[in-house]
Length: 397
Ligand SMILES: Nc1ncnc2c1ncn2[C@@H]1O[C@H](COP(=O)(O)OP(=O)(O)O)[C@@H](O)[C@H]1O
Ligand SMILES: [Mg+2]
Figure (tube, protein in one colour):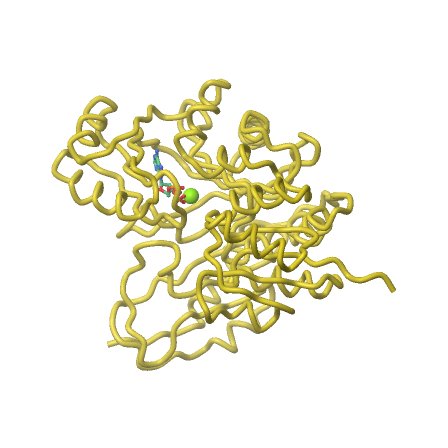
């Protein structure tokens, strides 16, 4: 028997566990690296090492030492440039380092795609609260202040007046490794997400959702429903913009997770990443909607095999919804098992227990739990989600 190939997976957190387990199930050996000494992914890996996944040289050193055959970072942005850098240096399949930077630096992303004619809001760099204030005034309020290189809505703030700039700037500046932050025009419309694969420059959109947000923090998503509630010509326009964005940013072969704002006038780019999305989107929802094992196909590409995806074209719907719970200390949780038995409920994940303190989520990672529902139509998955939410009862005081 030939020796199995070794795949280096960047990140050992909960959203990477499905990739680690899948790589193992496909017969690869797995090396997992993460900045923390204690991560859930290590338990599933053949080998692990502690290394900051944003540290390109450190990761390259470990990758060489462990003699890896492929490197992947498929659900978190911080490791995407590292993955591409190491793959380039070791001559392994990858997306290319420059391409990875185009997909992770929001200023580069907006500059390149606007030059290619993709609708973007006005945008400026700022390196102080005063500069951010001037940029926002130039652009017009409301404006959006955000880090160039973070994710999960950390440090992203919509500002309505100069008074709000100071706090928004400080939070954005705290949430970045760069020496500038981005100020951009506010896009008013319905936000959609697009999950796709790109093979030799040919993009296939596997799922398009519309998003709803928490009212106390509108930058954080509360629900994503696939397919998005738009007529076919708009969906076609979204696919077209998505293809143009991916081509402009130079991705030849890889996976993407994008957000667009459908406004009254056009489809605008919010952002795009060269990876899948967490919260079970990439691991569960995308393969379900596509009727094809996308994470498996991508791992095979990373391992040096052909990336081949055959979407079955069946109409399917899915809903990803996050719990909105009262603030306070949890005293009782009931109905979870009952809700899990409802037809169509794929998963209920609660990230708290009795005794934990709940507060309103401020970013994606502080959302307290999620429900994933599968079905044939939007109305069916939305109804099932409502029933599941009514069945789970969380008491807090
Ligand atoms: N220019 C904008 N106009 C309106 N809403 C925006 C804009 N930029 C960001 N947002 C909102 O904030 C969310 C997070 O911003 P995003 O740029 O996607 O950062 P992150 O990389 O942290 O996800 C978006 O999904 C969207 O809801
Ligand atoms: Mg985003």
